[in-house]
Length: 206
Image 1 (tube, rainbow, N blue to C red):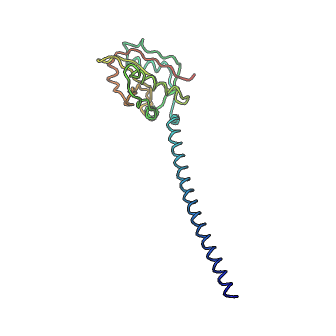
Image 2: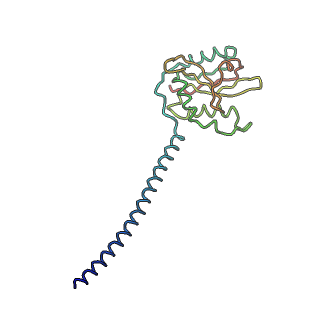
Image 3: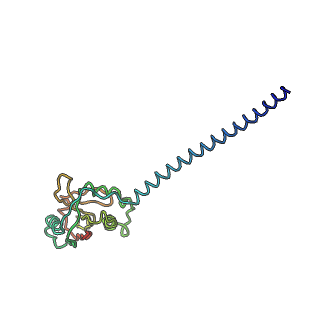
């Protein structure tokens, strides 16, 4: 009798051990699948964040002030005194921030990555597209960023300009110029020597 009970217990133990091994294997498989799901979820979260950063503009500047339309016009009129009549400032006031903040937006923009196509998407299209991006977002639309045309020795060219502070410490409103095809700053001394064709400015909030 004792021998029979021993064999029965041994058989049951073997069955339990086998089931436990199957359970452990299943648990390991489920754990691996769970880890893979977590990894995939983290990857999707990171991808979603990246896409959101690409689609949404950078946070609005926290350092800012205001500048009148007359002051903006005066700055450009000093640079282009002989063509001051080509400057059109249609708003009474603008927001103003540092040039570093403006460049932060320009760096986020992918306008410079668009392929240049003569007569279809060339200099004026790049300049208007970058200026247009600023105007698309309320938190950026009030800054005095626009496009302009001027005559170089080799012909006319369109690019962007903005009135901004040199830094948070130096709040002297200054004209800056940007080449939208590369995001590179343009030399103000060179710009001053050009013949201005037109410089329209109209983006401010009332």
